[in-house]
Length: 274
Image 1: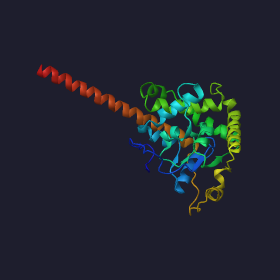
Image 2: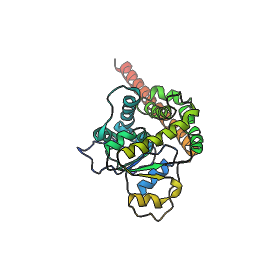
Image 3: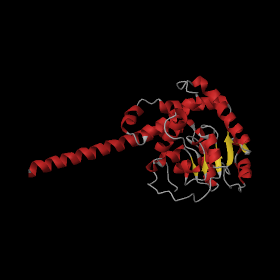
Image 4: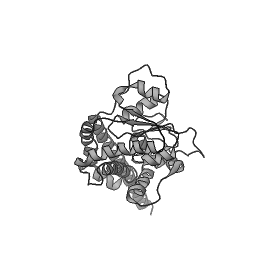
């Protein structure tokens, strides 16, 4: 299942039950090193979920399913996702998770996977707020997305809606007001700690700058003989989304051209042989 970003996964049939148990729930906020942790966990042998995996797995309706889960929890529409059976619809191939949309379901995932170890990536709230403002906000506010969002209902529309919903949760529904981000940040960490304590679960409070040692010690893994990954710098994230836009735009253009060509061929054939 190892593929590069932008190379989507094929349609897959879920087995009757999980082939491996969920082992790690990394529930720290986005922009706290979640991509670096995602790469690190893969290096340690885990099959890790992240928003990039969610987008790659859309042939299996991943983003549409997460959208339903978000609508049920935060909008009160539809049936709430509870328990392993519901979350395994998106996560059945994975034994570790990090980043959105998973971190929007803290208590649900703790209950669905009671034996998984909990990691809480963190950083100072000021730099985190600046990082989110320079990544999430430029992405969800790109005017060019509105074109694709209107026509690409299977990929771009649910993808952007997940990002927007994340920021709406972190701003307390205050219309994406950046001034409320610190409150949302602190509330998230309070929630994770309280939920873990209530369930008698241990947490690794972790900053990716600490490297392999505390992570491997907590997970009972040998330390790799290589530098800890450092990926997903802010400017790279925004640039990547420009590539996503043009890739999806060209795909839609090609689809429209193929449709127009087919119509033209059929029209000419009908005119010639009528």
